[in-house]
Image (cartoon, rainbow, N blue to C red; front, side, top):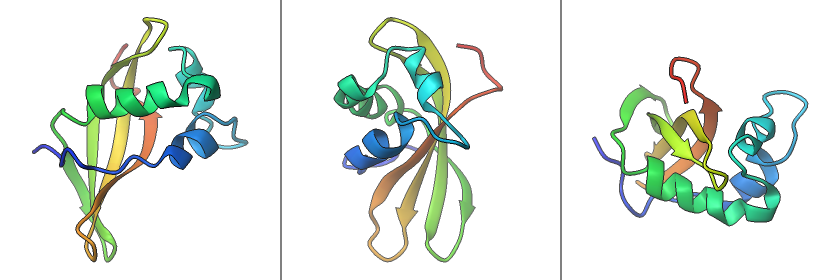
Length: 111
């Protein structure tokens, strides 16, 4: 299934989490390999929407808050490097809104 085109991808998720070094679960170094940094955070937002959101999403779980979906694919960064990624998205039960949750390296794929 495809997630809605109007899915929310919060800028803060990118600028305060994904592109900022974290003590645990750091993703900034992984994303930097493809040229994504805080200086070009908007590029990462655009690439999530254009390169991953159009791909098929698989329902992974459902709880009292909503349904969680996973999209696996590759994303080519601003430096031309391609990353294999898993992204998690959620459709909230109360609002019906779909939003981006996180991005992880996809260890099952190369790229």
